[in-house]
Image (cartoon, rainbow, N blue to C red; front, side, top):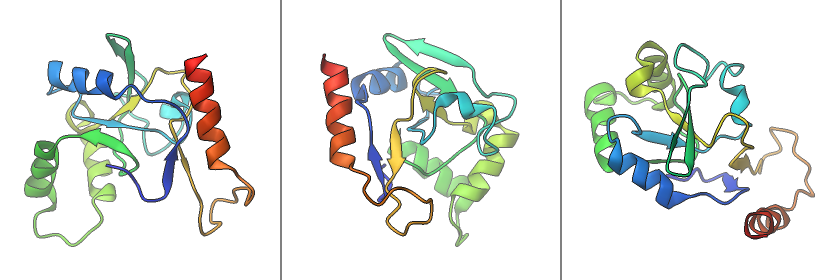
Length: 155
């Protein structure tokens, strides 16, 4: 699932994510691409909690557990969303992020998302800030960032 206002700023090992989700389906249920460094898993109110900052590696792909839930860009399965919709949001006309984040804080082992990458990895996505809400530089060049990420990953 890709947010309409986010862009990837580094290469992602999608095969590694799928492998982890196939190998451990009850553990890697949802993998989020974080807008900040993963070290903020303990600082950011959205992700901190008892499960936060535990790093695991499957093959060559690392994941940082959080106690939060966000709708920013992520990998998951259709079955996961059917469970979310039928169990917690059925009949409610609400944005899923707030009730799911509260649930993730209460039951982080099951509902807390994994952030893509290890604890010291840099952000995976950036908010494009089309309305200027986040004070981003209007001259911000996403193409340049993506090309630089590709260059750094392949050299």
